[in-house]
Length: 177
Image (tube, rainbow, N blue to C red; front, side, top):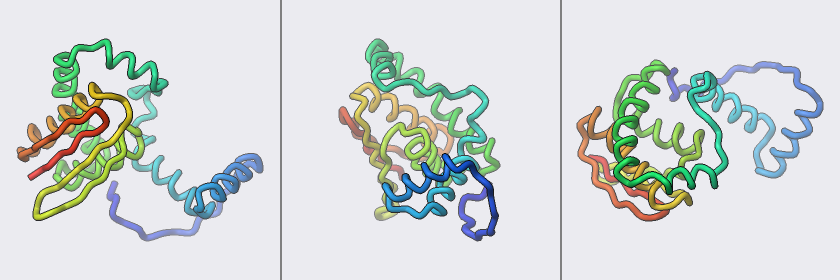
């Protein structure tokens, strides 16, 4: 699915009153219009959820997740991340009908991992031909280690890009050339 097209269509939908009340309250709280909020919900479904509603992803409370991380050795985290990162990102792009390119990989990290799966907050900047990605989170150093190897395995292993990283307890900074 092409993510660059912003041409719109008008569509009328019928929703339950209780859902409308929640949408209006959420729109007021966030400062968005109900239409913009519905657009975000539909975009999230069309670009992410429809591909991941088959039981491949699970939702788990953060404290349980962090406990799992803390019980794994750093070597085990690195092995899992390197094995799964390149394969999962590559497969996700192909499943969505997207070519495996640098731009689509960057979009996947920012949108799918950052925005939709909430792995981290992702800030992405292009500076002198170098992509700077800062992934910030509050899940501890081991999550930073996992993120570093998961993402690097795709850009280095699949796209043959040079990746420099700095790992901090609450962030990972990538420079991709």
